[in-house]
Length: 85
Image: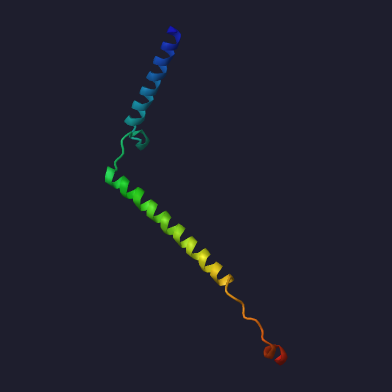
């Protein structure tokens, strides 16, 4: 079991050292905290939900409109129209 503890310690040390090197080189990927506030995140989520709702609503509206065009009663030819041809 002591062997596993040494391995665990060395992996933790490796991760810590690589994170320090990354942050020292000013790479943005190392930042663990977000610059967005809770309100900004909530606004993004709510806006996304509303946007998806609008898109779904437009799709449903278009499909229903096309269905009503296809289901409209077709004008039948009367006997007088047939004789004229």
